[in-house]
Image 1: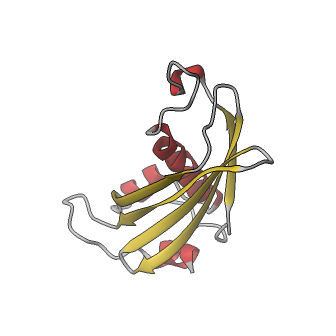
Image 2: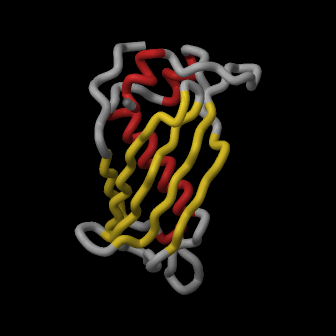
Length: 137
């Protein structure tokens, strides 16, 4: 795996709400916000020079062990959305990502977090490699 870059303080990912992500009223289905959190998290890692696939190839898996989402305003079909993601190290084996979902350049629609444990292929806790931990400092 290539060496990571400097940690991004925050990543911003933009996209439009797709019709398939909405309910009959054109409002985004609540579970899609967690999918959007993942999009933001993957982009944060990518900007830091890492990918989930690369971490897993090197023996580090980051399953979600906790998640929370606070819904403030509805997102609707064809809204332009921004997902802001920030990462922080909680311990040598745990990281947390905080998210803000907002209409591009406008109000916050939802905020939340996911917490991840670092485990090996057998599901046993594994310290994050030093180069990965350094990204969250």
